[in-house]
Image (cartoon, rainbow, N blue to C red; front, side, top):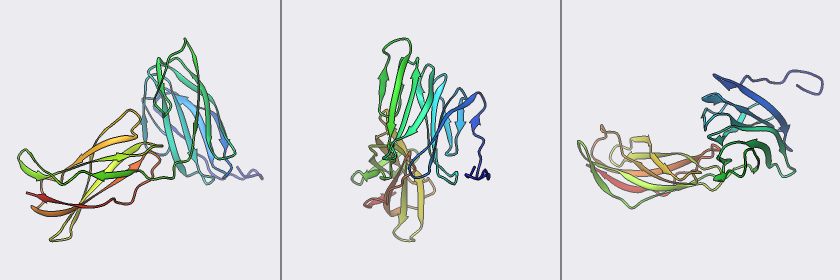
Length: 234
């Protein structure tokens, strides 16, 4: 609501089970921070489904002053994970505090292991405005059933939010027609480093194609397409 009590925006968020918003704060730019916990198998906070890590999980989200979803996270381990406090520091960083019974919990920086029956958790997050980066491996032709096709592999990295997806685009040198496919990913635990692989659809006409890769991170930053290479689709 405004300072005069006028309604500005509102949301109803959650999944199919218990969802709890336990703390809200604003940042220096007027953004709204929401923290809480959930035991829903999947929860929607405005940026797509966030699947369960275990039992009760921490949820953290940020919205603009107009209520637009900016990013959201579901954090936890295999046990019960809770938060009752979120705040913003003067630099715009997001501070989160809570507690956990999980033997191992990942708050975004890798596994934090058990110290006792119930442990305190504390984390700080910064705005990630930097897009990820991807590189294509040297040109190769590999054989798959039912026959040989042109395929590409490469690497994608993002040091803050982690890699969410890689889109590979094949542009025919003869017709100029572009076809984009989602690459398969194999990532480390925090998704900061991924290998990807993509091949054109089976209906692709044989010939030479200019190929580019474009990665998107979990903060929804998308890189400009990287250097291209030529692939022969047979």
